[in-house]
Length: 360
Ligand code: UD2
Image (spheres, rainbow, N blue to C red):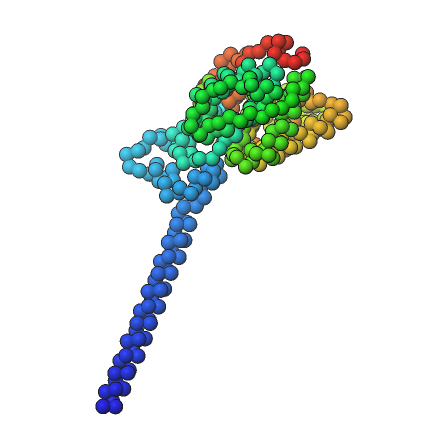
């Protein structure tokens, strides 16, 4: 009898221990598999490449690479290492930033990469005094060619808000009007853009957008300008000087100016009419240029090409991470350009300076 009870107690305690062991194993398996999944997910779904903004990474289960890997969807041709698409031009800077020319990028791949990007690309444009006349064409052509399919917030700085035309914008695109004073010299209007952009970034743009591009208004878009231009700090080659030797660049050569660049130095000559990048990188550029423009004013010097000279000085010290070819800022006076210009995307409008400017 005693032996039987002993056996029974032993059997039960064994059953309880087995149950506990079983539960422990289950718990271990549960946490083990869970942790494993977390590591696996973290490893195979890392942040997107630096050029693709954070927002897209939240959809990494549908990342571009997976879409490209779908069978029967091979719509991109292979980029063959021994077959450069543009052997006629430099496509990379000595600091390894791409130089964007027609033929150097595959629009389908870029489109795919930005398919889920829902951030905002801020774009500033100034239309002061008689330059309000250029807004209609600028906005209408931007709707056709500029960042099509992406969210764009145009910030129109003007002294005449009522003169801003009512242009119908696609979904995800909007205009904000910011009132600015009119100065009596066109040079002042052009230079003071740095200050107004700085204030607008502080007050709102940094809370409203990821990227910021600052462009001239007396221009028209003629063909595609899209996500291929997005980068941390983006400069555009001036179409008049992209083939020149650096000592012929139109840099400020007077030592007294903060925009001074000595002969024998310089990478490229960048245009003042189109620059951009991540909002905080553009903020650094405009605040530095504004500070240097004000320092110049104190010693009564105005750089040769106003703020453009300061942008060139800044970009020599802070190399752009992407450089756009003159396709992205062309001048009508140059006609269709040399054989290296396969397409004109954004170009100035010929203007009667005497008539349109506040002063000569
Ligand atoms: C070049 C640059 C410009 C600037 C300037 C400085 C290009 C295409 N343009 O242009 O960005 O660096 O040199 O010398 O690279 N504006 C007004 N009202 C005025 C005058 C100017 O709104 O009365 C604004 C407007 O947005 C215009 C910009 O300032 O697009 C530059 O003025 P501009 O186009 O007359 O200067 P420009 O052609 O010398």
